[in-house]
Amino acid sequence: MTTVVIGARGAVGRHVVEGLLAGGEHVRASVRNLATADFPAAVEVVQADLADPDSITRALAGADRLFLYAPEKGAAGVAETIRRAGTGHVVVLSSGSVLLPWAVAGNAIAAEHDEMERALAGCAPRVTPIRPLVLAGNALNWARSIRRDRTVELVHPESRSAPVHEADIAAIAVAALTGSAAADPSGLLTGPEVLTQRRQAELIGEALGEPIHVEEIDEHRAREKFGAAGDPATVDAILAFIARNRRDGESPATPVAREVLGREPLSFARWARDHVGDFR
Ligand SMILES: NC(=O)c1ccc[n+]([C@@H]2O[C@H](COP(=O)([O-])OP(=O)(O)OC[C@H]3O[C@@H](n4cnc5c(N)ncnc54)[C@H](OP(=O)(O)O)[C@@H]3O)[C@@H](O)[C@H]2O)c1
Image: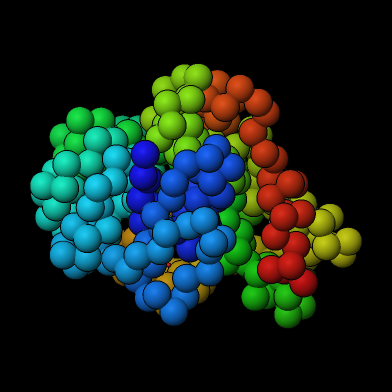
């Protein structure tokens, strides 16, 4: 059995490769630029870009299973390429926002993932979306100012969510690919506990052994900060999500990871310890 991992250097993809290897699976890892490949010797490496159908066809030749990141554009074309390749099972990293009715109706990130899931549905005999709601890795956006002066600017610091560790997202993808999931791996995937952004910053401080100063900013300033990183619709979607999560219960902690993996999901405190080097 060969499993292709597209985005094998990504935060989640890297753990998917490790998880498959640990289970004795044959892994074909793809990167867009071969010069960036740094995988264990057992991994077969290929060049592939979701925007280049021929490269995807080559990557999928003879493969049984595929893990991929949500294609940012052209999901229908990607689906057609996968269908022609005859891949048996596709696991795609989507977003839990597709399961929030209010988000799909008016949130660009959710709408994009919803459209992508619809485009990929039916491209293989089995298609399994993995749907994390909030990645713990979002806190890496705070790394530069924390490294600089142990400060983080937060809009709505009391906004709360249950961030999920990328290693758990990957473990669920691996369970889906290998058929070892003990429950539906497509449920709303979160970390084990709901935490305010302020508490997340505090936990990063605890991992560092130094307190982090939180500076509250208004939406105008946040828009200026996020604006550099994304298009206006994406910035609107992120801000609306953060603002909505000031209310209790909007971004819950679900039992999905525990049920699928049969163990406790990794905490945010653990994520902070795993990434302490990014904040030092
Ligand atoms: N932020 C959130 O709270 C949130 C919530 C739900 C879902 N998500 C999803 O989570 C994903 C981010 O996960 P992550 O942190 O693991 O991402 P990441 O570390 O940035 O990795 C992204 C990977 O995707 C690959 N990639 C990007 N464009 C590609 C293309 N055109 N063709 C082939 N490969 C391509 C990159 O490959 P190279 O190595 O070749 O560069 C890289 O390995 C996003 O796609 C988002 O949809 C995020």
